Amino acid sequence: MKIFDTSSIIGIISEAKCPYVFENCVERGYKLNIPNTVYEELKRNQKTYEIFKEHEKYFKVLDLDINSVNKILKRYPNLHKGEAGVICSAMEYENSDKKYICIVDDSGAREFCDNQNINMVGLIGFLKWQKRINDISEGESENIYKRLKRSGFRIKEDILRELIK
Image (tube, rainbow, N blue to C red; front, side):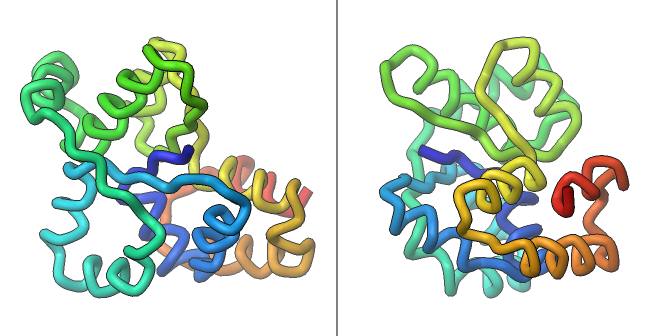
């Protein structure tokens, strides 16, 4: 199971221009999830939602208790609601026997996940996994690298280069 944050979804669709990775995951039997807080973030921006709508069919929206999200936000005010929702979702799965991984890029959310031992990768880690399982070819990986490098998506160069190693 994969739990996505808003920035990773938008990064895949509009910056890396490889939305087929969602279909690849589903075809391999993975469940793709977004917390209701991420869905609300996507819907709040009309342009973002238009980009997402075509790929919405691949995702299940997780209905989270807003009180749990607000507790996280109160303790960690640097997080956004979407990131807090991803973290809350992960914490629910952490207490079960279900395998999951969060795809988050915000440094605050990543730090929280690291501190809480929550399974997490960023956009590049997710794309590297896609490459490792041969859902992204070497050539496509290079094209994604170039598109992300030209885009406004903020990724450190050394991390971005991982795509073409």
